[in-house]
Structures are given as structure tokens and as C-alpha cells.
Length: 318
Image (cartoon, rainbow, N blue to C red; front, side):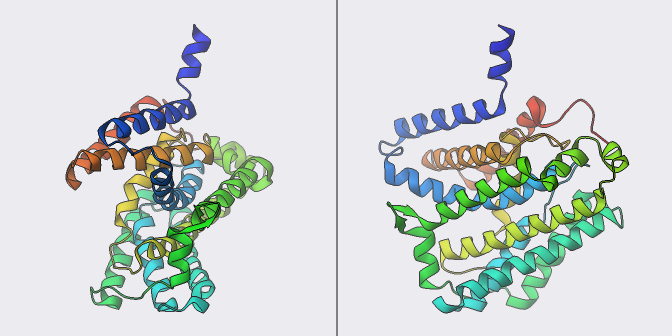
């Protein structure tokens, strides 16, 4: 019985069961909800959330109550940069990706330096960065949509690429493999778990905790910048608040997947399941014709419940 209880407490199992339940509920509410092409469409939306959640996952794993609330603004920045670099030109897709990712990485590094060198709490640092970026975007774009996606990028994100599967899902799969390899098979990945589990002990073994944590924030910014490219590829154009809707879901997806907000415990596999479950939940709520504010209340309540269940440990690690 104890063994069964432990299995049922497994966040990965809970997330997988939630996905099945939500698919069943959606099918009952709207026949065809679980149809193959509909599932592919939902996975496309989940991929966009899953990419930004990869960076959030790394920051949370690094411990010290790590969180990146600036990801929404960085997504908007990446979308605006990518849209203006491309301006509808297929030949400019790669430079647009590089520019958006590079800008996101630089913003993340600034966040990391603020947290590790200046010792600003992550919540305050990333929230302040979010405000700075939002203000800068208003000034740069003058509050109007700016830039257009290249047709090839839109086709890659939205249309079948191979075997009826959009290209963005292959990108997400590649990121998943890369994340699993880095976290479980490299010294850098082991270092992330080490500083997240017990930073004091990790430092005594010679790990540069500050440098590692700064890199994690840089990677979070990089993933957010890439997500901005995916978003403009999905929508066709960008506006200054396009990334705001991903801030809370990126945190919830990480927590649903079982990553402890205390750091040092979790995996990107769980975050993938969390992203899929969250997109399914949003789709079911939309099927029920719930207002946006109602969905936000449910998302916030979901995060609080998950934190009570397994999102935090009895004592934060130092």
C-alpha cells in the first residue's frame, strides 16, 4: 500500500493522468476534441509554452527561489526583433533567430548578474527587468504592431513539415533531447542539481555557484527569445505584449511537472507533460466559453494547489 501511495504521488504520473482526463473531458464536451489533427494543433501551442518553460525550468532547478518573471517581456522583445529583421523575407529567418536569441541571452545575463553579484532577489530583479523591457518596447514600437513573419517561418510553425507534423514540434523534441542530455549526462547538468540541492556544499566542492546561476538566467532569456520567434511565426506579426500570457503558465508548467521550487529536484520531461496538460486545460476552459479572467483565476489557483502538494519542500535549501 505504501508503495502504491508513493507511485500515485509521482508528479509525472499525475501530469500524465491529468492529460488523459482532460482529453476525455474535452471529447465529451466537444466531440472531435481528441481528433488527430486537433491534438497536433494543441501540441503546437504546447510547444511554444514548452520552449519558454525550458529556460524557466533551468532557473528553478538552480535553487535560491530562482524564478524568471521577465520571460514574457523577453518573448515580446524577441518577437519584435525577429519581425523587424525578417520583414517577411525568408532569407532573413536565421539572422532573425540569432538576433532574438542573442538579445534574450543578454537580458538573461543581466538578470543573472543582478541576482548573483548585486544580490537582488530573483523575484524583484526579473520583475524590474520586465518593467524595463515593456517600457522600452513601447518607446521603440510606439505601441503599434511592428514587423512581419517570413512565410517560410509561418509554414514551419503551423503547417505539416514531415509526416503531417509541424516543424516546431521537431524543434521541441530536439530541445527535449538536449535538455535531458545536459541535465543527466554532463558536468554542467550535475552542477545545476548540486547548487540547487545544497549550494553551500556545492561551493565547498569547488563549484562556481554564481557563475552557473548567471548562465542559467542567460539560457532562460535565450529560450524566451527563441519563443518570441516561434510566437511571431505562429501569429504572423508581433505586438508589445504578445509574451505576457506566457509568464504564469511557464511557472505552472514547471511545477506541474514536479520540479521543486526549492531547486535541485525535477526534470524537463515533467515540464513537457506540464505544458501539454496546461494547454489542454486552457482549451477545455475555452470550450466551456469561460472568460479570460476566469481562466487566469483557475491558473493561479492551480499553481497554489500544486505548491501545497509538491511544489515546495518543508524548508528551502541554502
